[in-house]
Amino acid sequence: MSCIAVDGGPADVCANCGMGSGGEGGVKLRDCTACRLVKYCGVDCQRAHRRQHKKACKQRAAELKDEQLYCQGLERPEDNDADSLAMIRVRVAKKDPAAIYFLGNHYSDGKCGLQKDMRKAVDLWTEAAELGTTEALFHLGVVYNHGEGVQKDKAKAAEFYMKATMQGHVMSRCNLGHSEAEKGKHKRAVRHFLISAKMGHKRSVENIKGLFIAGLATKEQYAEALKGYQDAVEEMKSHDRDEASALRKS
Image 1 (cartoon, rainbow, N blue to C red):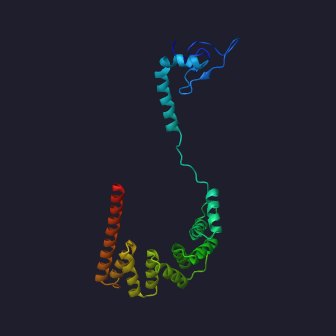
Image 2 (spheres, helix red, strand yellow):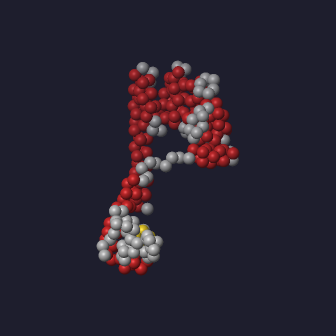
Image 3 (cartoon, rainbow, N blue to C red):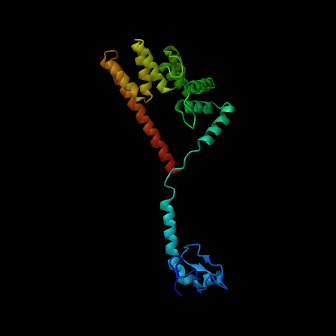
């Protein structure tokens, strides 16, 4: 007996014995769970029909799997902002400096369903900075330098940049160089840019180049900054290569 497709077949009948589901003496038919092409009245008929049905069943099962594979999962799952925010707040309550800093970022950017609130962001960054978060010091320097959520205060901005700089924050040192340059203290600015350039900060090299063109830095200082930057970049590449090599061997 040939396979009888469920769709387009003459009736709901068992693919093996032809017994139908309607009328007197009708039985409850069940789909072949793998392909859903045929129905059976029981396990015995399904087993008896297996050899005849196997090829068509396997082919249709593969088609169904592909349909599912290529028609589902087309969109990335959305982050649950409420859950993420709740987890951050739990850590904030425990005085976790990183969580306090990140919550400040969310208020600054208006993320995780929060309304943008720079004043709240500044309060959180201040708390995180007091707990030792260097990035929070840098952000405080930026907001005081531009007057975002606080009264503009370049002197206070420079203080925050200085604290972050002493903890090794490269961008803060570069910004501190800008602060010195704005005050006309170009020698001090060049010293900062030289250090940050040697730490791999490209913009610092460009800053020294600009001062050199303006006659406020020497050719030797620009050459030193350029070489220092190139050496730092090469060192970072070598470090990455070494790490990759170690991973391959492990």
